[in-house]
Length: 558
Image (cartoon, rainbow, N blue to C red; front, side):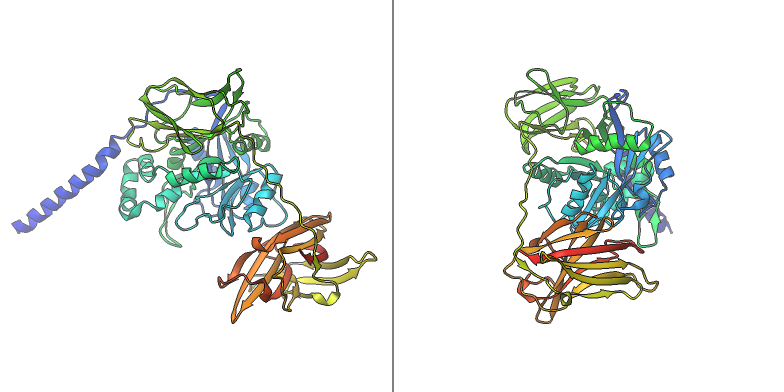
């Protein structure tokens, strides 16, 4: 009996000791003090939030209330969809918080969070460059989401003209915490929610390296992303309602430079925030370490001209001004072209000027030296592209080569049972050949997929060609597929690429190297073995009951 009591006693003592070891650093953790008010030319917000419009745990009202408690000015939704129409249409002032609707697009090479564009009458394409180009046409922004996530990484770095990448993702970091750290997360969260979240973060070396690399080919900005869902999933149907939106909103923030008060009209106010982010006029903060109220940085040329983050001053002689009105010690690393340019040792710095005499891409990382999390980049700024203009690639349009289809028998009409469609073929006096498909897409109750297609089910040998080229128009803006299938032995592989049309005739050219495999085996891309060719509309690009007329003229290859 006494032996059993001793075992129980020692067990309780051991558990209490372990609990003390775990709890002591948590309970002793404090944010660094910052009593500065948020300066009038900055707005503080959070980026990449999921709501009940997709897989989040909170309504927009609940999320906005949490943002107001965290003393934020704005938040940006990133609900899943291509785009998520409910989220995109939710932009509004809710209390004192500006909620900006956005979507996280699931593309064929990963996820891309975006906002600031008009909701199209069709679904956004799966091809990243096509999606980026459409977002840019409306002056929106788009960031590669969690680029090195273990489950959904980004795989296509040949894209151009995107806004930037998530250089720190709270959700992606948390998933890499390991069983021990994740197992202790609920206990740590119970003692100190913000500490528990901070404890899952690590210095984002691989993300920063990629950011510096892609900036060598054009302007790209880095952003801290929460990827907040307001829950901890335990399976398909089970979840825990933490970490809360409030605890996350107090962990990672974005400070956007706005030179005036936000308008009362929510769409106009959202446009101001979006323009600031699109142009790189913002910095990131690990808010759980300390608020960054009062911080500022800019580039001042020798003649006194000021340039903000994200800008491209031509003058390569000047100073990077850094204002740090804080009562705690900070250390600063200045990066130039991805390498350490200057380090400023830990001290209470109020005002620093870093001389610049060479062209280059300069950005700052600021660390709270005496904080437990002094290895995290407390503040990360966007670069100054000093003496470096924006790289613009100009793609030359190919000329048509061989005509692919010149009679009515080349295509037949195919569709699901519920959809309706008609197909005609015409030849003009100038020998222009036009295929016309009018259709209404209708979903059947017992089936997920619906489609209409112009189908060519005969072999084609296109090995000597680089791509397809044709003119196209539709009654209303729409996206359609060009698809072909290759058979090698008994195995088939299906490839496709979308194209955008409007009421005006547009020349479409799609290189075969841009087609992506969406079904079948990964095998040699042998264009001599094409067995089918389709031009189609389906549920992956169009909504049910979409009605349109597609015309294809002079279908050929180059």
